[in-house]
Length: 269
Ligand SMILES: [Zn+2]
Ligand SMILES: [Zn+2]
Ligand SMILES: [Zn+2]
Image (cartoon, rainbow, N blue to C red):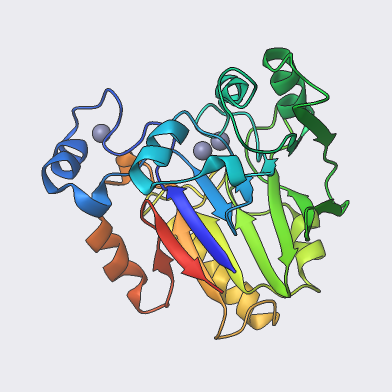
């Protein structure tokens, strides 16, 4: 199984779209893995999680063939994850030579807002409203959405994905997981966990996680046998406010074996 993480910044990007702070200036100077765009992940070239405003940039930078994407899962409708108007480009006149429809999954806000802008429905797009703790067949994968600790105005979703014998946990955007989510995960196994690390070394661990909380989650996963030493844990979705360059993050996480995501990173399971 192939997992590609395309964007690894928080909403503002790194350097921030309009930001002139010292961290963003440093990131601009250093370039490379310090340039982070908005969130998305692709599994086996066919299942995509989130569709940020940087999607076209991702296609050009990573030479992607998005026509192969058959299933699109939305975590929530914050703009750094959700730009459904661009999906209108996946219709006749704008795109040729691939098969319809694109299957879209998400909470009520994501489905409602997608339908508002994708008027060529039925033939070209299908919509599945996801309810937490219900398992959905998504192509050859089974996907169970779980409640996150994030925007209280919508049901932000984490995803537990089972595909070809592998178990992936897509854990952002979120703070420390709600109790029901912990309970549901307690009997499960995870091969790859991708976790929110927006707050870096800042003390907050609600709404988004910080480094300490990511390490604490790793410990709970290991203690409960949800993960083993063979499992992979990846930190992503970093805010410019944390002031940490890619190398700093790698150093901080080195002893715990947690990988620091960068734009375009490919993981094989
Ligand atoms: Zn976000
Ligand atoms: Zn900045
Ligand atoms: Zn968010």
